[in-house]
Image (tube, rainbow over all chains, first blue to last red):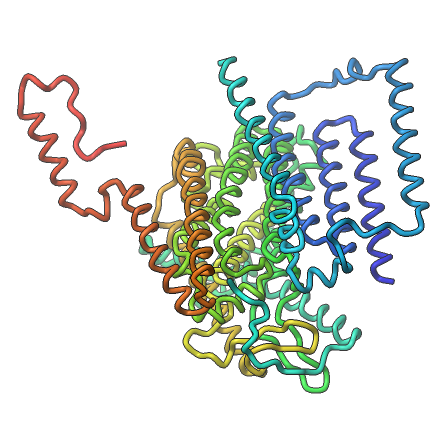
Length: 172
Length: 440
């Protein structure tokens, strides 16, 4: 009961934040709406029992990335010339097509009677969290079953970071 | 490796809280903790002024009430009734939102900190003495801290003032940099405690019979320094450096909005002190005595010692003492150490703190793995071996960053002085004499 009420509140918050992000004319306003959306999503993750994801959601997205976004936007001092970025014609059609596809997938997902448990998850999340701790639930499969994928991803990120530094150095 | 819950401790079946009782207890806890934090924050401002007066040999606030004890009330009243100033070209919504965004996350963080042992209430059940015992514990605090930056950056941007803007930018750069070191210095704690829930970190320290400040001393030091930077306290108060930026990001704020920034700063300080006490000084654990080693592992099940109301009171006293110690440390440092230069702050954060924290993670992780492989059980012996390892690493670290200033003492300084003097004595070699005593 109380979970449902909270769900509606945070779902509304997330949707309103997303709308604000798209519709806001001020770049800073857009970013802050995006933080609101991420915060609402984090709250919904908590309601689902996925505490770790919710914390990481806020720390990674709302924290680090957004601060960097603020840096860029405030230092660039974007004016009001965004009208030039809005394109008509083909872009409108393509955008509509993409939204339609996403809507269709979402519709199918909502209509599916019950979702299967993800691989490696044998019992409901609440019990696992009780037994292994919120971080253990993520850490055990990540560092045991999928450790190769994890390491490959981290190497990829490292390459990207080094590449960015090298490219930035060349300009100076 | 730690086993949770430990297998060899007695379990006590106690009366679980009914749903209604849980709701009422939670509401009472929220109200009491929130009010308590607000009152403590108000009196921290007075304490800060008393301590600064004591350090600078002044009298300090002494007019409102006996010994100035009612000064926070007078300040609060003044801030409430003072005229509010709006800069003509400020971005209005963001200008008003910014102090809220600073104040609210700062007040919310205290929710996950356990401040006493579980309290049994006859006829009702056992109440856990933490507002919300979240499974993510410390990650919640990190998440809210990273939200707290927004208030400051937004205040700087929305004020439409160059000094305020520079303050906001400094705040964002500094807090992003030190958040990394802060998180990295926490990882050894999690590896040792096996969990991020704060109640279980306290329990892990109780079952080790050793506070983590000893086996993880270097992490403790790094955490304290990063926490100073995260709370924007001197020597890291560059966002509001008075001598350069007027008062930085809150230059354009007056009355209660300005006050809200202050409430945010002091409640951040309070929370940081409480977190340091919980993670590294055993939280509400009373040293030596074993009668308070308990944890509520499920509604109605308490492991370890039997809960009692007087134990709750005593452990709260222990928690308050440890938190108070860190608050005094904060204030003592503020009125003793001068402010860093901006490049020094960045150098320290990225080139000293972060690599050290990473090396310490590797060392601690390896030690724990080796000890596990040797079959040494989690306990006092485990902790003492880690303490020795930590002492070696910490000694190397302090020798390197000290650069002959304190540890090698005056003799090294004298040697250098003699060297410089000898060079100055030779008339040919003097082209550009290095000033004695100044070294980068």
